[in-house]
Length: 376
Ligand SMILES: *Cc1c(COP(=O)(O)O)cnc(C)c1O
Image (cartoon, rainbow, N blue to C red; front, top):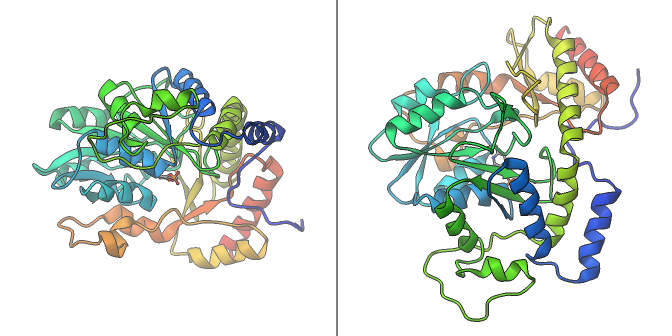
């Protein structure tokens, strides 16, 4: 089977409705934060069953959530090292120190026994990252946080649509932050949201996303702005635009279709690769997990980078999620306890293409080329 076009690792899926919605905003010539943002927030609030606030991207959502919890200089936040640098940058942006933790080798989510060892009197919060869409043992993280008086800020950038014990991720717990960047489970171009039941956090973020201008959100919802105002706290220019929200509203309508497709593709990958002795799969149950990326572990000392090259030669794009943050110059500190699983797993991780415009024959093709490359 010869392919002519590249199978992309990930991509947006934009239909006529998204394009029409953006044109509507452009025609109205009110591009900033206004009615569309309010409507997207209403739709998200209904989706999660509790308040959601839109911001400019997922990193801003995490930064604002941490700031709203009063986390800053002198504080420490526990977070898995194997995550996008966004999680770490959001923490260090507040002045707090991200404390890199190890991962559970089966789900690649935060390994609680390891996090426990890194607890200090300065620990103020824990940030579980829902790596690839699975949430690991989230209940245990919440009971750990309760025991030690920690805030929980979930980095749910990968997990839009995932359910845990029958409940929608973001619909329960302390604070969950999502990303709507171009390749996430739904997109608004760029964008993100914070979901929480905490009215103090909601109030703080409403102002902080608009440069700290107090009560400006209410004005913006009616396409107005405040001309006299006070500012009493540090804020940022982190609000969402109407153009972005217009895309997001249409994408949210397609979430069931998107979720179903992502689950179906992941299940097909599992079926093709399950028996292969050179591959280990994540332990996700795709009846509840909506996968953002499809990650496999390459076993038996086979060279991951050679396999990537072999797949690239067959027009299959792959990825590596992610360089562990404790190996980055900004965040490398001498660690008391080594991150054993992260260090040993990272060189063996490989992400295969996953996006909703693929079909089952793409998965078959990718798997047969992968199996071929593994047996050479
Ligand atoms: C995408 C992502 C973010 C940040 O989202 P942006 O919208 O890109 O700022 C945070 N954490 C993880 C794990 C992500 O993949």
